[in-house]
Image 1 (cartoon, helix red, strand yellow):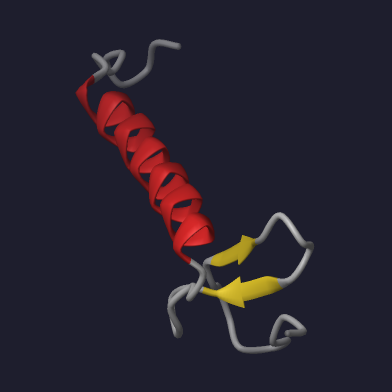
Image 2 (cartoon, rainbow, N blue to C red):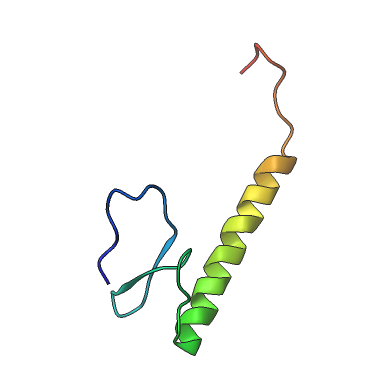
Length: 62
């Protein structure tokens, strides 16, 4: 699948065979690839959650 162009942001998964799936519009079908994709998404969400919990410096201080 070629990645769509000009449609704004998307979430794409590149499989171990090099093909792409726009996972925000369709699901990965291979069981192994689904497990890898799910693990990557879980890891990314964990990083976002950790960043949200990090103390933020006061405004005007870096």
